[in-house]
Length: 180
Image 1 (cartoon, rainbow, N blue to C red):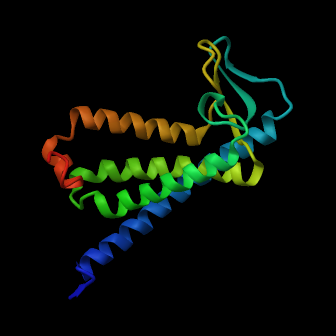
Image 2: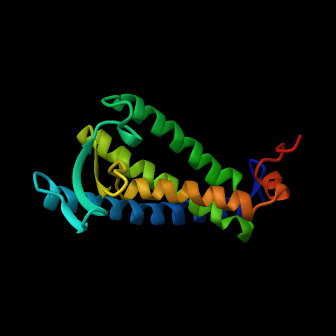
Image 3: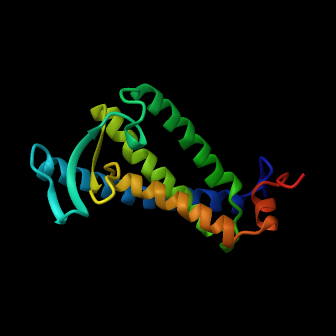
């Protein structure tokens, strides 16, 4: 039986996919916020906790900007951009990623991006800043958090899959007018 051009099994598949994605995202977001709670509880107003002297430490930071501290204080802009990105991610995850097992990696990438974006969005909305705490002192890399790791892992996975796993015909299934 068709409903709006979709079969009942396609609708059930999308509902199941959405529920599974939300459960995984909730677990990832929960872990992100648990680590941020630990950072606030144990690192705020404390000296950095050195894990490997001269290399890696835990250091509390309230980031009111974007990656690398860019655009400090532009919370409204970040909220609007994040909400727009979340809508696009949900659309892509639910409507564009094909059902075949070959594309499960894309599903996971969407969930990682979604979780990272929501994790930091919650901080921005509630606190007006994002709690960061991982710091690689040997390269003076900007301080980051678990949600940032989700986003970087998703982006790196997308690049690797795009270069070595997916082919033109795979992209054609995701974006039907890709080569036209």
